[in-house]
Image (cartoon, rainbow, N blue to C red):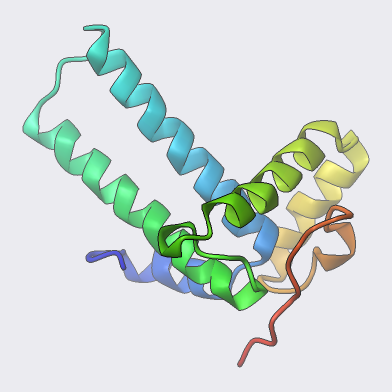
Length: 135
């Protein structure tokens, strides 16, 4: 579990939809991959501030993964990597093919309602079930 999640980000991740969590995990992972890649190639010099930011981003990503349990998504850190990657890839493949109107509608709904507003847009074939959330 993440250590120092900002209260506003924690609240957002605690209450957001499945698609929002997928997007957060994807974006944070992309940021971390890019920073590590650029530091390894010498394009960015590692500094204590950059290292601290990367640790924070990793903790934010871990916290987002923790929240997936609300939607029945298997935890990759508990030996469920294959199942988790099936879930992740299903969302990634779907998101890359969704048309602009649906993309815009999903983004509009994410901003309005944090939990079930986008469930009708879940990609077919997801291996998870939607867990009930307490409000």
